[in-house]
Length: 424
Ligand code: ATP
Image (cartoon, rainbow, N blue to C red; front, side, top):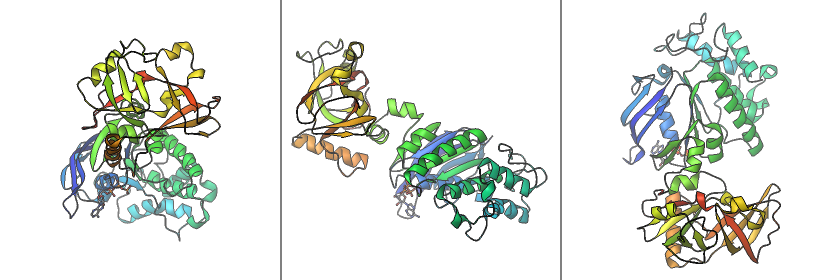
């Protein structure tokens, strides 16, 4: 019912530079899609074009299959939940939630008796009942929404007397009573402290599933993206890099940018060259002796991965911190899937449930240049010549001495350093 389709959407501001460049995306009815990327990648612009706060330079926006480029915001029947909640400070929670209904009533757009959609152009035909908050009088609808959001006991309070999370819920209440065809969220949690953010994240996820309403959510936080979305669209400099489920993004990132953006701590990138048929590598897992020679040592790889790496003079390999483990804690069955190498940890961070072990390496000039190019590509200030490993809390490894580490070579990613493309 409320699908959103973007076809080759471009946005150029006055400077002529495309803030959004040729983005195509199909958002299904009821789907929860996250737009994620670093600051300035164009995610807010994209959202604002969907809701009608920004003109579309070229391309087509469809809602339920109807072209909406020229439609006024109110005729799109979409509800936007902003970072600053946009609540009226002089109104109570009740009045804030009721506000869109009263506004619609005044302008004649709301059919209060059957609770149809507020948007004049789309009324009735696209209205839907959101988890029961839809039908009935304004009072009924506000109270049902408040109940859903556990705000009933706060209905008479003013926003100043609410916590950040409660304000957030009031903002969502306004979207719910409007029976909008889709919710659009613009970094709604970025003003909250970490604990509340986690709590609200879970609430939004549950509420969205319960209501089944199409939602588009903008964030620069990859944890929010991974935990909230059915699908995640990763943007970089106005261009869509990959649209996929959180699991697919994590397991099969299409390029260096997505690989580095998704996952925490971030994927380690190491320049490497392929050496075939070399002896001495440990636990090659039936590789026939192919190894990737890297600044932290030779990493044996399977024949399959070696085939991918062939023909490239220089490669960039990607190893997530969680691919590593203290070799002493890895059972024999698992050991065969990867390889053991010896490294010295410069320092360890013990987090209780796990620990981060850091391996530092001395880059030569070529590697230094590669890392700096990669940092620019990743929009990072710098990429330190180090590898972060996630080790079990039980591990008794010590920094400053040779340590046997196991690495799951079956999950290694191999990238073309020029194009950034994931070859594996
Ligand atoms: P953030 O997370 O920092 O909000 P974003 O990914 O949402 O970033 P946008 O706000 O969409 O990015 O901005 C995309 C690009 O468009 C940026 O380069 C920005 O400077 C530019 N931009 C945004 N709004 C305008 C405007 N009104 N006029 C000119 N350029 C703009």
